[in-house]
Amino acid sequence: MSISTAKPGAAARPGLTLTRRFRARPEKIYAAWTEPESLVQWFGPANVKPGSVRAELDVRAGGRYRISFSGNDGEYHEVGGVYREVVPNERLVFSWAWHSTPERESLVTVSLRQDGAGTLLSLHYEQFADETARDNHERGWTELFAKLENFVA
Image (cartoon, rainbow, N blue to C red; front, side, top):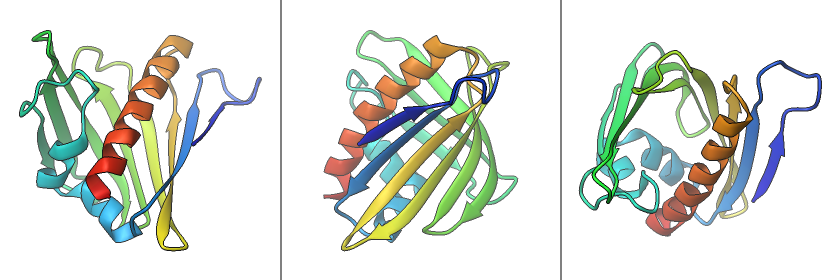
């Protein structure tokens, strides 16, 4: 996995790019992101309460999504947004805001590219409120990518 952050002076709000290779074809990775019954199998942090992940996905430009889960500590989390661009098996662009901080919306781009028998996934975030939000999301997505790797294996 490679990690990069926004270049100094490039933007007032921090960004984040994570790249990872998966041993599965782009179609399988895309389905893991766009089919609710698949997404609930791998989404959520390491301390997610088993069986608590719910996903409502209207995967089309202008469609909304909502994903919720509870932690083992009982704390409820919900994130949602709107799909801005949908290119099957190649690209998803969507807004991202936690229900607890709806004013802190960021933009996420997921790009999939065939890489031999696998897929190179690039996840790019724009418009984080601050470096703390960026760092928290970096940790969260690193955990999620490990779960996604197990799911698509």
